[in-house]
Image 1 (cartoon, rainbow, N blue to C red):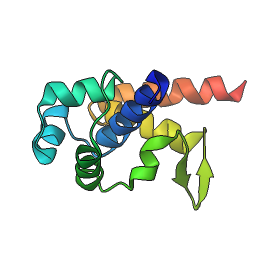
Image 2 (cartoon, rainbow, N blue to C red):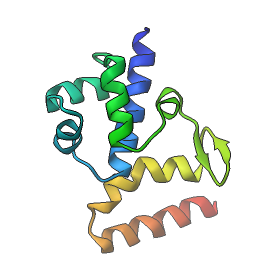
Image 3 (cartoon, rainbow, N blue to C red):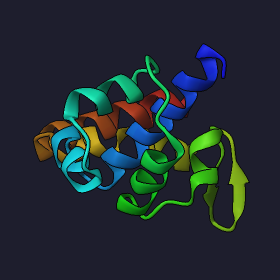
Length: 115
């Protein structure tokens, strides 16, 4: 497996983990692996065994096929970029942010997108 595929897989796992508002430690505990090992998976340094990958998918309630590409189901269609994928990437970050700062960021994005 190529290094880029490992990074893609790890990045997808991280996106789904954050969308479920789980820390690495929480997901690692659910799967029965060391949090440092999960970290190495997410950054693409190691490739998990199929058994571990299945456990990660089950813990995240995510079909394994979703881990192998940047496309995601959104409104019944495949999306490789756009609002739904952007939302997934930032959902974990925004869930921890101060609501006032989130509103400032939303205003900033509305201004940028208006151009």
